[in-house]
Length: 282
Ligand SMILES: NC(=O)c1ccc[n+]([C@@H]2O[C@H](COP(=O)([O-])OP(=O)(O)OC[C@H]3O[C@@H](n4cnc5c(N)ncnc54)[C@H](OP(=O)(O)O)[C@@H]3O)[C@@H](O)[C@H]2O)c1
Image (cartoon, rainbow, N blue to C red):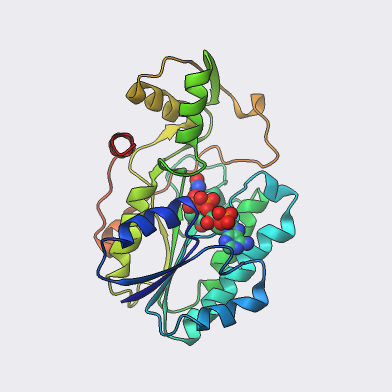
């Protein structure tokens, strides 16, 4: 199988890259310098240079949630227009397309686990642009969109690395406890991508939720990180209104993962176990 992975330098792209080193499949990775997703007109020409592909995995995105509130055009280009273009290319060349979206589309005021076809709330530019990207490819064949949440790992900018850095340099820290979701270890997300790449998607195109199992607040996540790393830093729970950010975040973005489990036979680890695995690989 010949697989193109767009976005080698991000958390997910890097995790897939590490796994590709021991894979029998042929992988091609692009970074921004090979394929700039803001340059929509160049996408088709660049993709066609890679010859016949079986699968495209798009790990790239405009992920600066707060900055997106002011960099609207950029977020639209990267999270919607480029996705649409890649999707069209995949569709017209019979290539499977695996794309990633976000739990932030579920900012809906509900407090029960969100299902893929349930109520949405698009209350930030990031969520709007990611959802528009989903919509641009939702009717394509052989297309799977994974909504994931709170992605972290040992590489890249993420909550785990920030908490370890701050926890080691400060005596105390305040973290919000009224945003509830589920962390996702990037290795588990990369394993999912590679498992899906081997499967038949016939009749299964569409949107799927995926994170680790279990539920927590960012405060609980920080608490568990400090516990598992023996970092002694006093943690205080605060409300989102005490830590204002330019972009509004959902209060409850827990996702129901039954669809991916039953459709593809995926088993999912609890987030505290996944965190243990991550820290063991550090
Ligand atoms: N991180 C999370 O907590 C989270 C939560 C929910 C959903 N997701 C989704 O999961 C997917 C993977 O996220 P991630 O955490 O791995 O993202 P990430 O670490 O922020 O990486 C984003 C990638 O996109 C690339 N990129 C950005 N703008 C580009 C452009 N104009 N042209 C080409 N490449 C560009 C970046 O390249 P540079 O290194 O050159 O900037 C980087 O490789 C994304 O679809 C994201 O929306 C993430």
